[in-house]
Structures are given as C-alpha cells and as structure tokens.
Amino acid sequence: MRMQSKVILRVALLALVPIFATQFSHAQITNEIQATISHPFVIDNTTLPPGKYNFRMLSGSNQTAMIAASADGKTAIEFTVRNAYDTHVPQHTELIFNRYDGKEFLHKIFEGGRRSGVAAILVSREESRLQKSGKNAVTHTESQP
Image (cartoon, rainbow, N blue to C red):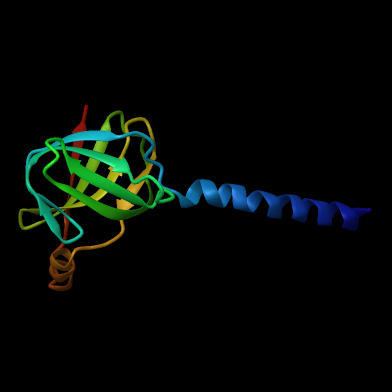
C-alpha cells in the first residue's frame, strides 16, 4: 500500500511539472507598454532615437519575442526575450537599461504591479565589446506612469 502511494504521488508530481514549466518558461508581459524614453538606446544592434514607444509581445511568438515601435510608426524592431524576475514589485512600469560611457542598452522591462517581466536575450555587438574591454554597466531604471 505504501509503495502505491509513492507511485501515485510521483505520477501526480510529474503531471504538474509541465503546467508549472509552462507558466515559468514564458515572458510575463501581458499588456502593451507605452514609454517615453528621453535618450537614444540600443536594442540588439539597433540604436533607437529618444521618443515615445510602444512595447508589446509579438503575437504567435509563444511569448518569446517583443516589438518596440515608435508612437509615430516610423521605427520598429523585434527582439527576443526571456523571463526576468525582480526582488520587488514595481508600482509603475520600469524599463531597465545598462549604461556604458553614456550609451544605453535596453536590458529588462517590468509591468507595474508584477514581479515578473522580460529581459532582452541578445547582447549587441557594441555592448559585448564594452563588456570584453572591462567596462562595467551602470544600471539605469526609468519608471513610466
């Protein structure tokens, strides 16, 4: 009887693994994020000018890609993301940048009220070069109302 209980418990736990894995394997941005960014910034290998941007998960990407599009529709870039978690729950949406010598690289995005967000997967060639040369990033967070 005791052996049957262990087997049933193992089967039940194994059945739950895919459910939890699915929840934690996808990015956690659910709404479109509108942000005003006052400085040029880099996503992947593209430098975007300051301005108003809309960030949203790319449909059909299984929550692994985002699009950043300027509000005027002139600029858009798709980029891959992974889950990111923070130790605090931000009250407002936060965009986190890595800054090297005044140049900003988009690193993470968190929606207000959510501890889970996304992190850009690809590091640009320029950011990689700066890291290899021994430069240390200064994290810069911009909160959006």
